[in-house]
Image 1: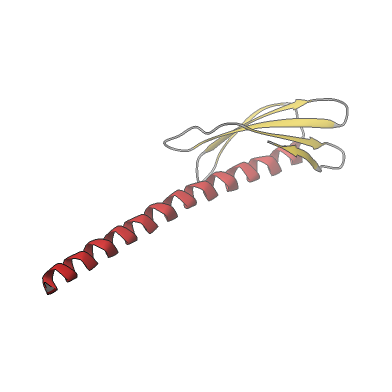
Image 2: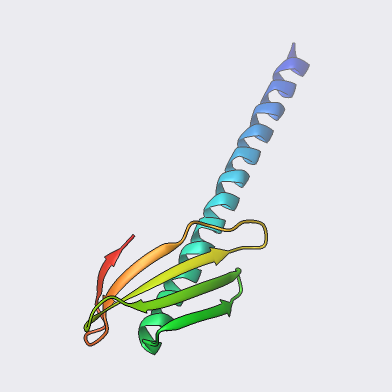
Length: 105
């Protein structure tokens, strides 16, 4: 009986550890993606040039396509690609004079 209790406690603690490990691994990848996209947005707003720019960072590669919407507004389409996955593009509209973000999708 005591052996069964010890085995059950061991199995449940192992599954809890693995569950927390997988959660932390997934959240780390989310933060890596967010940091890479935010870095690309800052670089794109700083440069404010129309065209395509690729940047390889610590977590993966970002491709930024910049276009002008009107005299004051620019749009950045950013695609992040990690070693195993390509994510949906992110669009950022900003004012090129004030460098303030208007819309982020």
